[in-house]
Image (cartoon, rainbow, N blue to C red; front, top):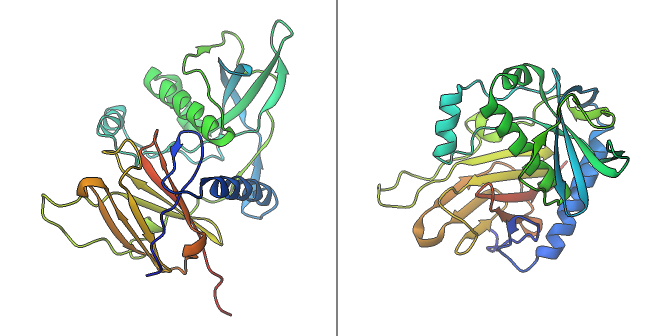
Length: 290
């Protein structure tokens, strides 16, 4: 294994666990822009025209904000679970449930009084949208996740209080969006690409849930669910060329994962996301020898 690296990130709603936060923030912002630009031209992306659904009004420090909740059949649906199962997952702090969404770019608009405001388009799967229309619980969950997603993507702080617009399904105009033609492959779901840590005694550290996926041919991302933690204090992380080892404070967690890819451990970075209670790790990959 390469020398242990404590990795840091300086982003809103994330707690850094290293001293290199400014550089990592710049790296992530640059990588995000490059990935978005590349996604518009790569063959695995496709352009969709979301259909209007409903519009909610909230605000930020910069003024009024409208979120257009839209839908498209091209966006994959979430896992088919009942509301009771989903509620139980949320109560148990399980982070395995995802609602695929496409978060559009901000666009300037004028409200009914002719005052300037900002609108965002957030699209979900059309079948799931129809199901959501008959469920206050799912509708509020989607709005919460959409708001948090916009905050993360655009470094916003939106007011959690909102109200639905009556007789107005959207603000301004709904633009086309680029989405992935195929779901990003989660390495964990392939079954044999990482080796879990050996079984430990019941009183020993817990092995946290790990999600891995290729965000780009040369970038591997990881999410490690840590529901018992409120911050990064006491976390340790070591990354080698094909191994990730994480230790939690007071021996709450331990993860030792083998990853059959060549990782650039010197450029890898990580951060703890407080809202999601997750350790997020970005691991650039070394080029494969020809």
